[in-house]
Amino acid sequence: MSLLNYTALEFISQVFQCDIRDIKNIQAMKNGMTNDSYVFDVDQKRYIIRIPGKGSAELVNRKMEYNVYQTIAEYNITDPMVYLSAENSYKITEYLDNVQNCDPRNWEEVEISMNALRAFHNLKLTMDYSFAIYDNIEKYDKLIADHGSEFSNYQENKEKAYELRDFIQKYAQPFYLSHIDSNHDNFLLNNQQNQVFMIDWEYAGMQDQDLDIAMFTIYAGYNKEEFDKLICIYCQGKCELARRLKIYAYACIAGFLWGIWAEYKKICGVDFGDYTNLQYSYIENYYPIIKEEMKNI
Image (cartoon, rainbow, N blue to C red; front, top):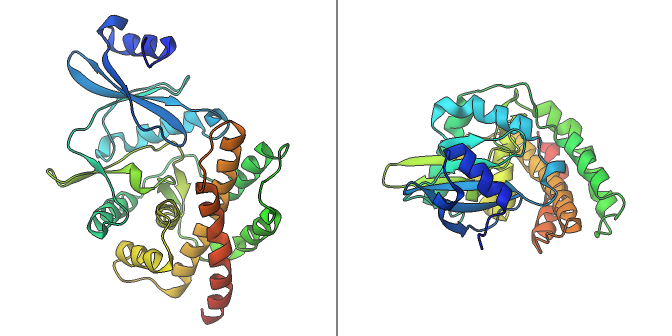
């Protein structure tokens, strides 16, 4: 019996105009946090199909994701798209050989990834959709409202997140297209061709692009020394205090946001274990630092 459900198999057969029996060598990949992915062959060529996971319909604006891929299509910065359905959110891309995910503990790979991220940012792409952090906090908060948070200091941390809002807005850069889900697994490095592909753009939207630096940090689980090193790499050694504290603040509110996200996924039956604790820890650890060092701006 196939690992893929019939709907997915039928979708593939329609895209490639082939018989379902011609879809070969189906293998499950490591499941992502939002989606499930499978590799398969058609006509001796390898592809990946992404299938939305549990609860993702409430978390991702798939029509906007479709528009993002249209916006970046000409720049060769992501895996080659075969088909993306704006209706059922199934996505088929070409399978990339000789690539590896960025290792966040390998600083050479991190620097390569940050160079790629900076180059993408410098394109200053625009679209008509913004990733509104605080709106998403409220949306995710409502999704867990009937169950409540498992964390006793949830409301206290939410208040801290909102307290940082004015500070962030004061020092925010003009909004351009940002990846938002810029974690190390979404940087695919091809060392043979000296190329980096950034994948999984489903949360992308207009934002202060410094948010992407914070996102990389909170997924990697960096401590402060590592966080500062990442900022130094991205900013090429030039980052004034106000900008550094703003990036810390982004880690606080982004960590809080993804903490709620993880709590909702658990309600949907997908438990990410310590990931939730890690995300909530950033506001607890960096809020006091920001409040203290703001005096020096």
